[in-house]
Length: 279
Image 1 (cartoon, rainbow, N blue to C red):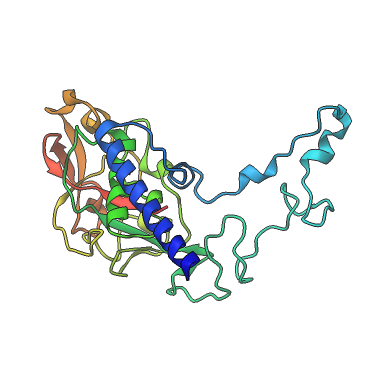
Image 2 (cartoon, rainbow, N blue to C red):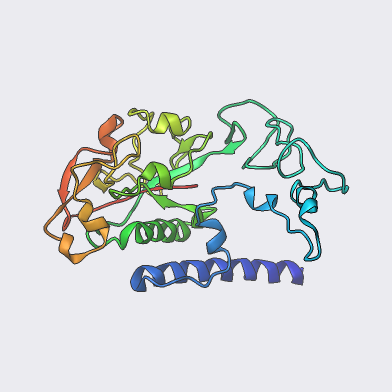
């Protein structure tokens, strides 16, 4: 019982650390020291490519390179199925492996695991922000993560903002999930990434991280397909006082057609919300 209590206290303190440091980043634009943030909020998106590289001993000859980089199985024998030396993941075998985020061994589409990918939560932020003062794409992501953490959402460090600049699109920044995109209250927004970016949603992204409805404008700078809304000034990349008198692309939270992501250009001094998407 004492060990269980110790683990519970440790988990609570770790989450509190993450929330405090995310808020500190937003205020200071510094770098977090929480050990888990670099692994969960980066751009790896559940891939396993880091395991494919092996290094030959210093005294190895060049002719030995192929044998040291081809990979071995857990039993020590060489694998031929993939570059890692291990069999490719099989969706439906009830084993989570490779880039799978779930594998429940069935093809039921509405049980939280679809095509071996978990449902991804998407919400509109409960807080409002001026477009020129978001802190750039990084600052916007940190705001989403802070809100998700305070709301007690699992995997809060993976959330990113649906936001583009002229040189970085939301489509390139976010994971293209095979699973469903759902609101906090369980309503389905889209069946997968292709449906999310098709121009039509099943339900509007008008529910915040606390499951409260928000009928509000949203900073996006993005077309429904996730590409930058060209012609927008992007509020000086969402991070400069000089953008105060400029404009940025906005969407409508209550829309299910393409205007959910891009409706009009809004003054960068306006206070609007963000869409936050779990990765």
